[in-house]
Amino acid sequence: MTMARPRVPWSELPQDPISVILTRLDVSDVLNFAWTCKSWGNICRHLNASIFKSGTLMMITSKSSQDGCLTQDGLEDGIFGVHEVGVGKSFDCKHRLLRNKSWIGGKDDWLVSTNDCIDLQITNPITADVVPLPRLNTIDKFEMHTDQEVQVVFEHTHSIRRVVLCQTPSSPNGHFAIALFNDGLMACTARGQSDWKLFTHPTQLFSGCYTHYPEVWLDAIVHQGRVVAVNEGGYIYAWSMNDPEAYPIKLTTPEFSTTGDSMVYYLATSHTGRLLLISVHGEERRYIEPGLRMVVSEQDRIEQPTALSIYIYDDTGDAWQRTRSVGDGQSLFLGLNYPFYGRWSNIKEDRVYIASMCDNDSIIFSMDSEADQPLDKQNYPIKKESRWPDGLSIRTPMWFRPTVPYLTGKKPQDNC
Image (cartoon, rainbow, N blue to C red; front, side):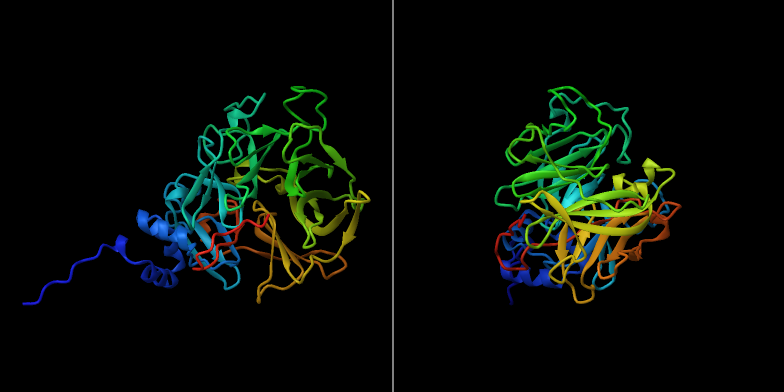
């Protein structure tokens, strides 16, 4: 009589066999692996294991709709599209942490997500880690109203446009996030803080002077211990990360070409650590429909791009110099995500890729031409039913770049 072998629960499998399983999972299944059970989730955290190889270039968008629904498609089930740019593969992924949520910012493989109550949190869909952010009503002297203009397609939303995730929870110093609002306000929060700190606006003569400002902030970045932001007029200001309530320093404004086009701006840093200002020129939209995206980007005011220019900042001379190189043979990726550089065998060097611009998932600029005109555009293969009638993706497309070491057992570090 042979004795039956004792059954070992899946959750108690040794770490090594599970690591082998991870290497063989399809990309559409890996996001569910970490939360299948608690022990598997812990293994993913300890191994930093992901079928999404570290450094893979991806974009996340709406899911491939099956029911033809045009509003909030995929939100209830937490389904979204993942596109591996380098190999041209697209998948529908499902994650419980994104049920009834949409992303409004991110850095690498961390997303800033929100629900209809504006409960903000930083989520890593690979490791299933979640870090809640403070409620927006903790902002001093800032009253939230439910009748403000809607930027996220939910009921009872407020005027938050975007959250710039400058540092993730993987950073040795923890996360640092900046919220941009459509009324010109800007606020930040960091690890260990239970509230949002309001930045002193450059037009604010004294505390509590204004609650609405004529120009909004288009982008913000952390550079050498300072928060640097650019507004829609191209004016650039800097605050200390540790003292956002101090009056900001105004930096010199570059001498932009006088073409008569409208301009929008992005901020980044160069490979040598210098501040970059990216200016996109183009025809201004005659009409902007707030409901066309989950997040209405201020960059959506450009209907058709005509040129791109990059300026590099000289800290010692407080001056900007035009440059025609992204640098180090890589390409620069901009959008709702925090800017990053990358080099891939099938991606040409010295390109600027901007996600969710001018009704396209991405616009590509080449820096090796004198005109700096748009080189190409890319729309990823989600089904027609998952787009608005004019072709826009319901979820705002955003770059997504896994950064965790693949099965090395090392803790990932934020290199911001």
